Image 1 (tube, one colour):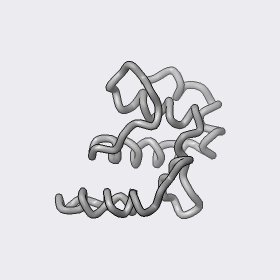
Image 2 (spheres, one colour):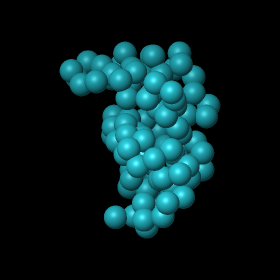
Image 3 (cartoon, one colour):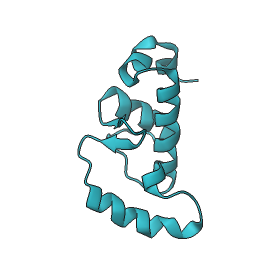
Image 4 (cartoon, helix red, strand yellow):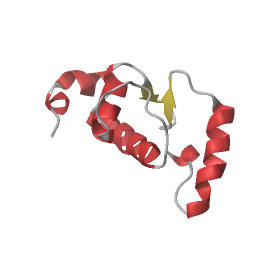
Length: 95
């Protein structure tokens, strides 16, 4: 387990443990499907990337539970969603 999850700071930043869990899971799926990291780290561990993105205020959950980035471009997300939706899994809009 990463030390950041032992601290309550990251939980308060996101708005609770359930929101943190949802945000981490959805962002991990996006990274595993080819989304680019929003932080520059020397690691390729997606969990560390997600934690860094949260701590640096790069990603958040909107009011409807969708993951958003600070520089979110919905047209780009829709295009990527169409490209990745051919595998039968959930689309990026579902993340």
